[in-house]
Image (tube, rainbow, N blue to C red; front, side, top):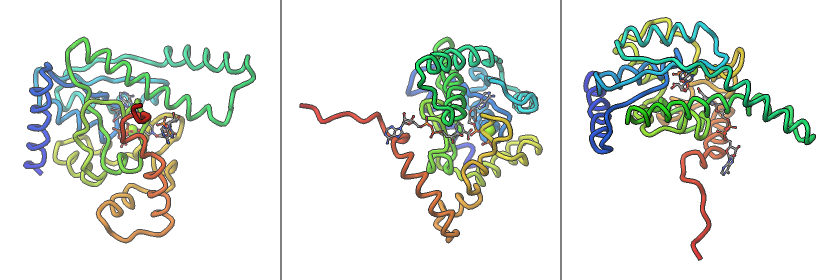
Length: 246
Ligand SMILES: Nc1ncnc2c1ncn2[C@@H]1O[C@H](COP(=O)(O)OP(=O)(O)OC[C@H]2O[C@@H]([n+]3cccc(C(=O)O)c3)[C@H](O)[C@@H]2O)[C@@H](O)[C@H]1O
Ligand SMILES: Nc1ncnc2c1ncn2[C@@H]1O[C@H](COP(=O)(O)OP(=O)(O)OP(=O)(O)O)[C@@H](O)[C@H]1O
Ligand SMILES: [Mg+2]
């Protein structure tokens, strides 16, 4: 484990060096993925790293958990509350759509949720520009393969150190990095709406996705879900499509 962590920390340091920037920052949600990345970032750039808490109508417990992670890692931090910004923007958009009789109610929960992730992304890049830092993402192998992230939201980052680590690997790393147990044991959630959990929304579990990624046999129903999510999210792992040059 120490070797894996050292390699990822060295890789992060190399990215800072190659990009000619001053350091690294990460959004901290109170979940396990960002807890691990926070610790990696702090090790890679002890004096030039920033953890950012970005509540957006979020559960206050998540913010408390984010603070615990930050305190234990001893990393500098900043909080920017996006709740009001989000409210102004989403209600303005919805009002315009309603006036034009073009509001698709059934799409609103998702549109509202993805806007939260993209406001976070915009805030992180505003801070990254200020400090001349890179934005470090938290996607793990299971999220990356299934495309379970918002395109240009939490997926809009400069570096993805955990992209080859399964959710189980991330959990082992978290234990080793002394992430608080309550964060290690909590249900993974995007926190984008009340009661959302990743596994409920996806209709499969991280344990099963991890097994699939390791080439193990999994139930047919789960295999279908995982492969469908992978196919439908191919565009998120590629550059924007362009026509042939003519
Ligand atoms: N074939 C295609 N080629 C090019 N672009 C394509 C496309 N199909 C859709 N698109 C574009 O992509 C958009 C859909 O993608 P996107 O906007 O990402 O939205 P979508 O994949 O529908 O939703 C994001 C999912 O990620 C989950 N999430 C988000 C954030 C954090 C976390 C977490 O775990 O913390 C989870 C969230 O709960 C939701 O299930 C479409 O609106 C369209 O603009
Ligand atoms: N309230 C928040 N403040 C700052 N960053 C956030 C917040 N919510 C989400 N993020 C960012 O979006 C990322 C994606 O969220 P995701 O839920 O996949 O990861 P996590 O919360 O760290 O772990 P888990 O998947 O176990 O919930 C987070 O890791 C974090 O970088
Ligand atoms: Mg989360």
